[in-house]
Image (cartoon, rainbow, N blue to C red; front, top):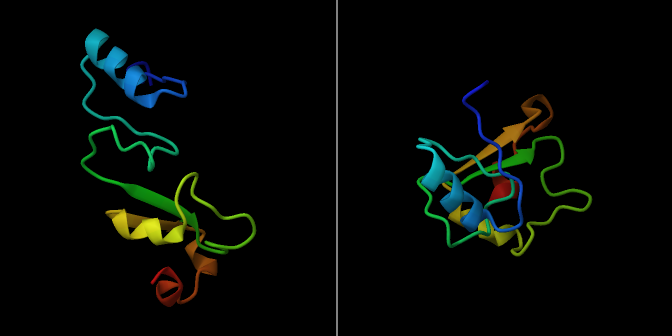
Length: 90
């Protein structure tokens, strides 16, 4: 994808500003951007492992799982293993 820009930095806000000033992006996708509140967002999407969404060492970087209520959508990968996960998410 020649049009794809990748920014790698701890300061997601500054990186986004730099990209906007040099290019005209129409979309930003951030990995682990849920806790970066300074960033404008149109959609907060959280991806969880459907086989073990809260198992093992699950943690959000700065919040506990109650912060998931602020997500616009939660996507489960490996959903064949997920079973009835809705009560767990609530």
